[in-house]
Length: 541
Image (cartoon, rainbow, N blue to C red; front, side):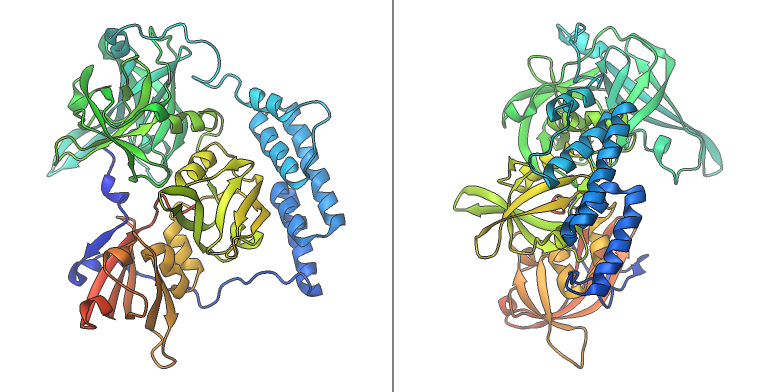
């Protein structure tokens, strides 16, 4: 089963436990400042940098040329991107074509290709993608058919030795057919040893069909996404039945669902229940379903189906010590990613280098409030700053962090997009943003890239200001963000904190700090507090 504990980013630990088996970490002493394009030396350096980007990252070069504002360099970069577009068309690399096409349209409003429209490019990019192209003639008509469309995933990792004895090291999960060509969806964590470059042991991948639990059919990994815990497999057989993908945005709390899989090795097990919640923030991107259908080890990767026998989610986790607390990834996320799983092998998610929450006015969601921007990142260079509110990206209205994350799942990295936002004075502004690659550990990347006074905002939800020239570890809290670790620990503006130590736990993927503090809400009593935050959360974007 997926380790849910990694995804919770609020930890409250005692000081005696925080720093066992951890590694000390220090923030940088300086951070990048906005480039001063009135300085001739800076302009010359930037032009040299753009020319180097042209060789390997022409879209990045075009974006930086646009920011620089040098028409000659912009034109040079435009031609380079147009050339790459034509090459990708010739080589039928239509995802690349789409990336170049959208970037040129964003940078040059009114630009269009002499032969193809963006819609035609989109159609070519989606061609042959499992479950997204063609008509399914093998859809299940009854539950028994659904059982046949579900498979057992079998990862043979050889022999492991414990207490001097050898045991078979087998990972068992579930999966389901989405295409009659033999494509199967499962969880990334089920097949992780097949794609993890750090894993050096033996690992072989097979599937087993319900009507033949003896034969192991070889399978290969086509694509995988560690962030969303999804994977696409391929076997060289023609399945009897293939699932249709539903529209899980229509599901509501209380709707009936059923899970199919291989819990603890019991093939073809069906359990039923309801959607307990549609909005659990347990993954780095998006919200997942909470379900009460029984789920155990081996169910991971299996389908969650509705009364019409359509897949509405992919089972990925359960809290085995508690009954009725299980979780599934909405099928909408899978559909957004299938193109990349099919053609990109490892899915890379876009990243602007920001942290923020949904902006609300009364009960209405009005945008994505930016509460932190990493120095030197895409958003930073584009002019986006804390307190800005993103209201549109690539023409798509944004009313929440969920809107933004869902849209970004369907976007390619290394793409330029138009972004509209309200600045701190509520004036509507626009800019071009470049979709960089989301780091594996955004929180850790931020801490290593920014001053502690600012990095505490995305990590713990508190903005610090230095309050002593003698004691560099003494700070005053300037701002506390609602719903964050700092808020839940009852910190307030003007509280005094001394940072005693800061360490990281790479194994459990969280960062911890030991604070000596005087808090207004606690009558300014002296105390030491240890708090932690995960390396990733749904609020980094």
